[in-house]
Image (cartoon, rainbow, N blue to C red; front, side, top):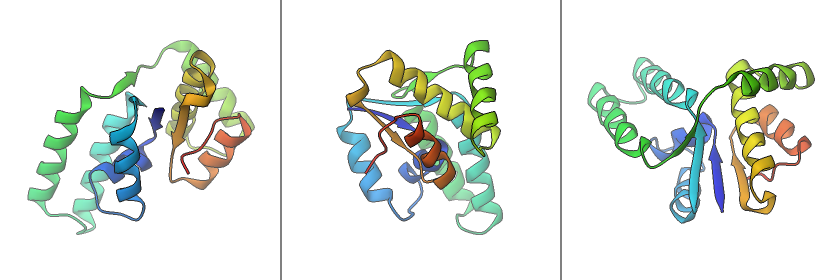
Length: 142
């Protein structure tokens, strides 16, 4: 299985949240774990927000950043190009998505179209993004 993680799913690899245990199991069993380059900046933002909200300590944030930096090379990371960014724009015209969510969806869709479709699973914990992914034919992580 090829697993695509948006940032809401990737965060569960590092922070104890509902669904984290299941996501970690699936990610460790996946043949390949993919994401978009933007996830790194989004993850750093999520760690900083968790610190500001008191959900993690400063030491915890540093540990999460080290773990992310260590794990990053094991992910298959898709980069932005003009075609992908234009597709993200098209997806925002069609679905009520935030910009970075549309970028994740465009990236996952590009994998879906390039790979064997039955192998790809899209992991997100964002309801509007999941609805859009399903409408495009992507299989969600169950």
